[in-house]
Structures are given as structure tokens and as C-alpha cells.
Length: 579
Image (cartoon, rainbow, N blue to C red; front, side, top):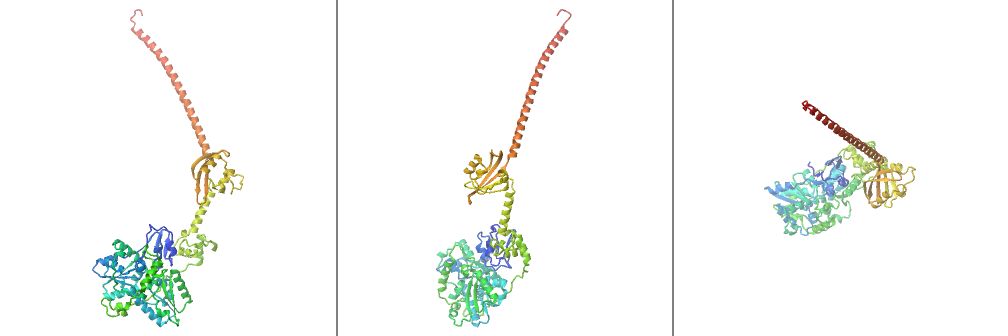
């Protein structure tokens, strides 16, 4: 089976909103992996509709539809009645023109198929041969029962949905080579169309249709009004409002052999199914829709149109328009009688429950202890991780669907514990003061440096411990100080000061790094350097004096040598005469 929803990992920010809203917890957040687990998913689309980052995308079939239109095949649209509310149409016939501009050959209302299914519902109710009945119009509700309440399958009326019935009707009337496209607000219809092949060839959501109109530059408001090739009755059009059981004769029944219940919203659906499983409900016919507000509030409605109750008003007005699907059936192209009587609408539902071996309670408790849940007091059940209860979260960890690290209180406690250990064991003095320079908290190193007598410091003015005026002036005048060196005269110590301001609490955190030893070593080094320079200068001066003395002596000896050489020369030049 194809994947109908995919994660865009680049957009997902691990907020777990999709997991929180998922009714079956079919989403795995395991380390860096994020995925939809198809075996647990009921295709309700709530995760995709709720994602603030739009990181969950349906697998679009628009390219398939465009290929159909560009081919030689004829393509017929089955459009859900909720299109009126989705696009805020006072004149529904404009939708027909818009769809034919895209290239569809025929446009019919899915309400036509709804009437076929409603007729069979009526037959079942009239016979009243079983304890309870559950309608089968909502595929997500069907998946919920098959996967999580298979013991209730006998209560589900064994017929296809209006979409499938209409798709089969279209192919029966136009020919099996016709291509059918369903357009509606529901992701689950894609799964249903694949599960029951041969009826609907592609599914397009209303949200995708809106994008298609924009790309084709089609404006519904400027389109002419056209008529549908097949329409539904008032009752068929009311299906999106929860109208599959809306039959006046049932409302007037006096024997009350069956009670009629309309349930929408996932939590309500699960609650009524739980009641049925426990045997607390009998003689009821239950119309079930997973979406809160039924199909008019489906997950893939256009995001920029009307609110839920505005859509409902449009739908109710549309449903009031009188039509007779069965009279229209006699005038539909090539149909001279009620061919729908021979239409195959029956189906079976299957037990799809995933038989997972429930973990031993001791194993789950051990996982919870690793999460810091040692007692019921520690079980906050905050839901931040996506699971309603810490126990459920621990089970998900056991099955590999989640990690311990995705527990927010666990991470916060771990981070706070680490920060506390770091500050408590820091060699730097740390203190927290308010805007009045009153001490709120200090660490042990601060007491060792400035409070040897271990006096109470909380709510005391900082001047009692650090009364250096330069320091006091600095923290009064500044909200932030970075790497400033200061000398405290009273303690004869040097410190590097860093200060940050916590504006939300009007507090400041001051970090004092003792650099007295460094300063002492620096001074000693400077003194040694100066002494060395002085000694070097003395040596140089002495060498200069020696050099000068040597030069002087060399000058004297040079003169004497010159005189001796001159006398010697005169001697050699003497010829025996007088000098």
C-alpha cells in the first residue's frame, strides 16, 4: 500500500503536535527518524491538518489526473457536496464550469452515490435484525473499527461509501474505460480508493483543487453557471452534515425500536465504540464521522476560506434545494431505468488489529524509572511528548516508537540538574541580585571568597559583602558587563566580572572569576622582566666602556708603532754620513 502522508524532515521541528492530535499514535519519533506507521494509521489526516510547519504532506495524485485529462480518455468528476462550504459558493453551478475549464468531461455530485447507500441503510433499519448498526460512510471510522475495535465489525453495515458507489455507477453508465476522479476534503478517500480498486481512479483534495484553480488562473466568481450531469437528493447532499440517517419517517417513528445517534469527532467516536464494546449500548443505529463537524470540517479543506459554521450554513442552504436523484437517474446519459438496482455495493470489513504483545508492567515501570518517574507523583501526564500518559509514553519507548529523551520534564530536570551541578561546583563566585542590589542566591565559591563567616546572604544588600565603590557603581549603571577587571581593596584581590540581566525576572547574575594569582604572577613576571632589562643595560654599558678603553689603548700603541717605524726607516736610509 502506498504512503499517503510523508514527512518533510527539513521542516519538522519536533514540536510533537501531530503526535498529540493523532488518535492512534501512529507517528514514530525515534531519535532522528520521523515516520507514519501505516499499520496503526486510520488516514484521518488530523496530523497533516494540524502541523504548523506544514512538514506533513499528502501524496498528491494531481499529476495522475493531469495525465488522464491530456489522454484520449473521458474523465468524470465525482465532487463531494461539501464543496459548497469549502469554496463559499452561493451559486454551486459555477463549480461545474470551473472543472470543465480544467478539462473534465462530466461533473457529477457524489450525493448521487450517497442516495444509493442511504437506500440500503433504510432497508437494514427496516429489517432491524441485529443489536446495533454502524454506518460505513466514513473510511477513517471504518479503519478505526477494523484496526482497534474488530469485535464491532458485525455492527458495521456492509456496504461501500457513497464515493465508491458513485464511482461504480459512473463506470456502469459511461463504460468501464471511463476515468473517474473524486474531489473532496478527505485524505482517507485516497486509501479507500486504493483498497477498493476499479471505482475511483484518482482522488484530489479541495486544498489541491484550490491550487489547481490558481495555477490555471480560474476564478470561481467569474465562471458561468452550469448544471451537474448528475445530482443528488436533499438527503444525499446532507451527508456531509451527518445526514446519512436523516429520514423523516424515522424521526416520526413511535415504536422507537432503534435509537439514532450521530457521532462526530475522534474522541466521541472512540467513546461510543468503547461503550459498544462494553455492551452498554443496544438497539442503536450510529452514524459515525471521524472529523469534528463531519465532512464539512475535513482535514483538506482550503485554508483561506470560511470557518466551520459558515461552511455549515452554506451546506444547509444547498441541501434545501429540491432535487430527486431517482428522477434524475432516468435522464442521465444512456440510462433509461434504475441501473443502480443492479449496482454492486456490498463489501466486507476485516480484522486488521495489530497483535502486539503487551509489555510486562515491570518492564514499563523500569522504562519509567529511567525517565525519572519513580512514583505516581512524578507522572505529570503533561502530554508534551505527544502521549496522554507517562505510562503510554513508556510503552511507546518499549515498542521503539519513541525515545526517553523526548520527555520534556525529563530533559528539563536533566538540564536543570546539570546546570545546578556546574554552578555549585564552579570555582567562580556566582550570585543573583535584584534591581535593588539585594542578594537572592549565591554559590559555595562566593561564600569562600567573600563570606568566610558563612553569614546568611539571602535578601541582604550586596554592599555588606562587596563594598567596593567602583564595582557598585558599575552594576548600578549597567545591565550587562563583559570581562571587566576590577580590584577589591578590602580583600586585596583582582577579579574578572561578567554580569547578565534576566529581564523577565528583573534579576542579574554576576560571575566573579578570581585572577589574583594570575595578577601576582604577572607582576612577578613584569618585575623579573624589568630586572633582566636593567641587568642587560648594565652589561651593554660596561661593554661600551671596555670598547672605548680598548680603542683608546689601540690609538696610543698605534702612534708609538708609527714613531718606531719612522725611526727604523731613517736608519736604513742613512749612508754613513751624518744624520
